[in-house]
Image (tube, rainbow, N blue to C red; front, top):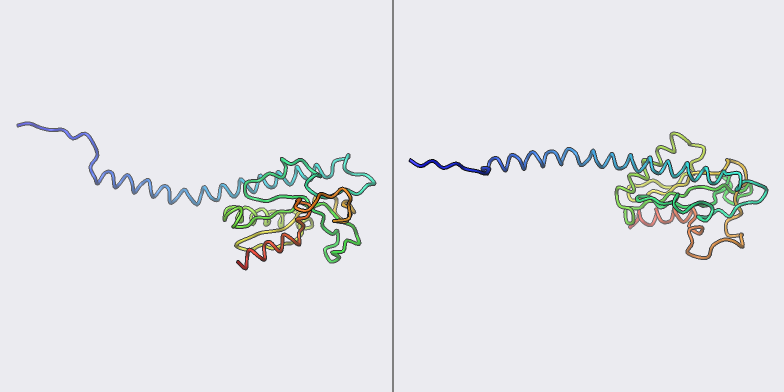
Length: 196
């Protein structure tokens, strides 16, 4: 009698192995997504610190008011995979948007599902919550929704005039520059995205 040896896997063994792999992927995908959001939030906090150091550097402080747009800082400090970051001027007194108490430099943060995807919005929400809990006096409220997030964080010393009045500088960049993307425009982006 001739005996044959099978070298290979049975269909049952292949199905069990496939089910185990699928189960591992189902369990690990949300963990990876949470890890990614946490990592990107830490990166955003690092960018915030770097921008704050640049803005508060001795060379930038003085008697002269600054033009508060992206040219105020190094471009690499505004890079993010999941957030649109920029430098804007915000009123020192939120109740007085005309800026009678001067303007502060702020990091503008925008993320929409259309541009940065759902992960970008989750990162922006996590960053917003971190700022809200750790630095509430520096948070310029914006809009936080499921489809878009927009807010700003003050970088310059609070209450001290730091920026020129937006749009009044002869040195300001032309149309289409990020200096024209102010916080009101960010709110409009969020409201438009939320309606669509």
